[in-house]
Image (cartoon, rainbow over all chains, first blue to last red; front, side, top):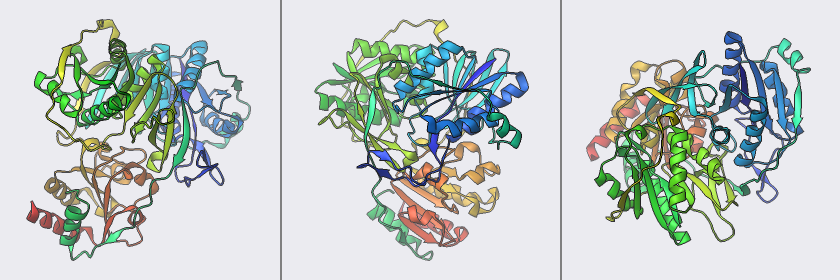
Length: 246
Length: 321
């Protein structure tokens, strides 16, 4: 079995969000970058568990410049076998999905995992697009994935509940909490990752269909209005008359 | 020419997020000088379909095929693309909910349409076609220009207030060619947990954290929620320790909610929790620790013991109801 895990470089969850160049670029100064948590904790670790229990080769793919290599090495240290970096700075989801689909077509995978979304762009787009471009079934926002032969049983989240679906491989799955638990790479993994193959792939010709023109921060909150715990009636009044939410 | 809106339904009822998407799509149609067509897949009553005119759809395409009662992303994509073709739709609108996330990106790839998900503004067409979207888990916005001729937009739930009219839409049957073999993802069972207000659609959410000390103390949260007609939620540690079920967990790794009112009880307000709730219009924080970071993100706060304050608040609310 061959599994592809799509990973993305994102700022750390607690990074300060600020912009430069007239609000057109994310300010990377002092920011630590990580593997997008949904990609790492859920997609990658579940793929590694499948490798350990059923036997599989786990490939990693990311789109980005040379500055994404530290996060790729970390994913290799966790147990990925081989990595591919598509050398592009494009941020457009169709452009990136087209690159991943092209890579997947050449390699042929039984299973493609992505995170449910990235914590920076929050697009939730890549998995569905890759599936469409490859004409594969897609199961979004999966919280559990079990495999029996070539039939997968997947729990996916829906409004106010959960749906259990069955699908025959190959399939694209976007992963969220519940799939697996976060792992820390061990020293042996870190050493081994240094020599694992990391191929740089030049992008195929495709159009980007969107571009970010600027960023903005939400207006600052006016500040909290504190109400005495002995006067909850005042809170009720404010919610009713001032905020008009009850 | 038209704007096509995918109007999501469950159990024969059109979802509130679909009304929001239709209203959004109708406004886009107005901007472009074209009409708004809603597409409904699966069994839904005719009266409910006509009522989509209330939100600005002039026409409703309805594929009543019972195989479409549940979402199969690839099948839905094929149908939506066929409808977009028939209606000469340049713009296709989705709700950015679970179903939207399963289908919208597929449709975008199939139509080779630029895709913006989590839209929080109507397009600005003064210089291109620029849509504002939520990024960095609610901590910022990006203005995204869609440069392709076709466009797909997924609208952030609970962002646009509904302003229904009495208008009715004309309902037309739509019979796309689909085969049983197209259904590759098969639903084997569905577990809906509460039967009450789904958390992501709730207008008011009452949420509890570790400050409540144990699952046996959740009665005060539930009483307050019941009084307000609210959904209940919790923070990550509460779900992780099993005090409350995982589907109630809001935050970075859990659900994102954007209610009109979010009441946080005994939650400190870690940045990961805020990422899931910072789109709420009004935030009330009740915490006995005046240094809790959540107060910085709150509109109203009470520094006090939840076990005293919350029952008092419930009683005060009952007075005005």
